[in-house]
Length: 492
Image (tube, rainbow, N blue to C red):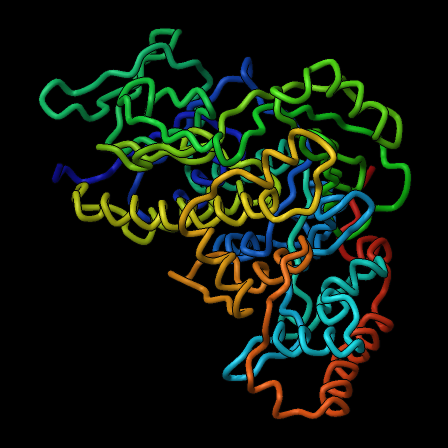
């Protein structure tokens, strides 16, 4: 298809739709952007937790960070506290920073492992600045990105904020519901969208942000879906908002239970709570009872049920349609990667934007890069369930004994035998693999011989110096709430 791309039509609003509209209308010249959404469908304002890559999107759009945070009731996030995952009653922290200090031949985990063997290394998280700051409930923006952070924000307010930016840069919003997707008979490409009010919206490139309904990429183009539920069996979530019982903490809580896990995401004005579970091991009434008995603060709304199937589209760009957000697939929000994958799709599309027409080589490259991204994140999430010592329920016994993708099995074996972790294809997670594998209880059987160049006293001083440095840095930081009050306090 060699027609110039002059009109981009985005089907669906929400986080994915308005992120795409704001970026395309502000950063790509000489195109028309139209977004179709319906107030009847709307969006649900559950709390959204993010990872540090969202800051790149913010910088691309030259957002005023303090204004953005005020308007979305946002707080800061230094990582995720995993509770009851390794074993009931045991916790660990996945921080957004680099743990310890590596050398050219070996990562910090090798030094830590020998120190642990010798009895003088403390918890792995004690050597990560973000983890130490989070546990102390401290936060500040340090020079040279000295403290890596992300955000918690209200997804509905985020969409409204981006809508304002998109419309300021020419995006046209059309209120309506899609009744039919019209295809060109000769090519099978999408030609136009017919709305229930009779309006016909024609376009050159269509972005499907219609959520799990996937009206364009699946409903019209029958792209196909790869089911990953045999590796990630959770299939339902309950979402509930509560009033904040205390000042917000600078991290997400992920609390494992006997058939899944629970999230707590602190915003300035409320807390987003949710329960993720597998309906084979917990029915809906049991899940609701469990959630309601394990939240703090007055309920703002009734628990909302969300059914899902974990997996991905066979193609994320098919013909002249690109899927973003839930229409492209679903991975549970355990590591807060959903908005990252939306952002990656937007940036990837802009980098190879087909201004002079869609080329199959661009489509293939987009799909290949997307598959690499999502499969790496899939493996990272599966690891949380596979690497565990829990055997207190059928659910956890299933997770411990299930087969995993070959790519993950190799990575776990490599770390278990040698302590080595290699980042591939510029994948999202790096130090995170070590933090979570060690946190979940997988410890290397050996360390790199370069560590033995230090005697025990030198190694002990090396580890203690890193730990003391992190504690000294954190001691000088304000509390998370103090920083919010100073920098981005929302009017209540």
